[in-house]
Length: 182
Image (cartoon, rainbow, N blue to C red; front, side, top):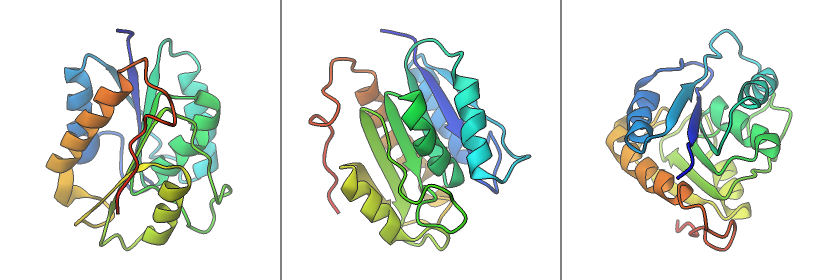
């Protein structure tokens, strides 16, 4: 198995080692993956965060998985067009919000999973549904708010299954992706 690197991108109001990222990083480490959690707390501009992420991962050798929460979900999705990760794991991705340059980001990855909270009062669920449907993403809508903190244990289980799929190198990109049920 190749050495995978998992790169986390946090949300606008959080930091690089919040509750969710710490929990998911433990899962990644159990799989033997290298973990990077970027610190963009000094910057609230999503487009600059995209540029920074792309610059940082250029030097990484081997397959990459991008994980993003809220603004970080938007950032990793836009960056995926250049980075071409094996997988994207998006938590309450900031789609459908004003002031974001790319209104319909196009993900480039073999595996694509989106998790969103029913009670999210920041990111409209309709935008996330549209994104997931358009890109045939695995979509999980869970009883939680925007931060998804009510579902950290469940998130680690979902991430473990997602990461297991990412580590399988011989999978067909679009046809093998499980379709979401809503």
